[in-house]
Image 1: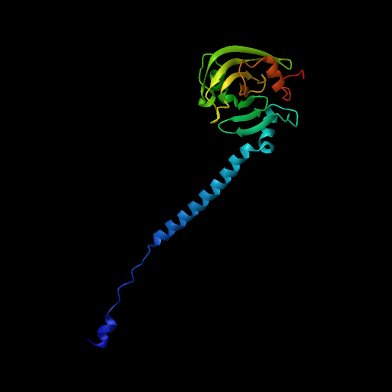
Image 2: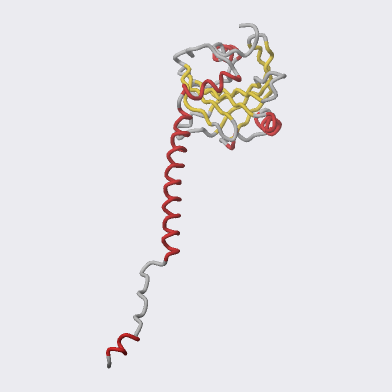
Length: 210
């Protein structure tokens, strides 16, 4: 083989070990992972904030003002802010209070369930209820309509959401949104009395006569 033969030969191109498109894909995947981590962090911080009274109670105060600080026996537990607002308190005297704030667009659907004496299901699918009867309670110069019932099935493993309950509509006619209070007796038995409702709502500005 002559030198000219060697000069005429062309070497085969080196094979690329990693295709160029894969680098772009890999970069995109890395970006996606980073974005997912960032999103998870912000979601964690967002949901963690649901348990913060400093972050959540101002939203309730816009709809239902209350005296601050609240009595020590009325302890804020958490707020659920989707698909509407739901503020949960535990009262050391043996009650759980839930203030449910629903936009006008969803008000009819919620009113037709939780305030319907023919509806035996629990709020948001939480257990069920029976022994339902209509209730009318005078609170701070307002007549609040609602239902008394017995709640079965709790919102926790300890069954704190089970027991005699009452649901009352707190909405102001001009507000548009629907505001409902649910009280469940978590300690003891017997219907929740009007006097107990008045006592539990004392810090909250429900009506004009306080």
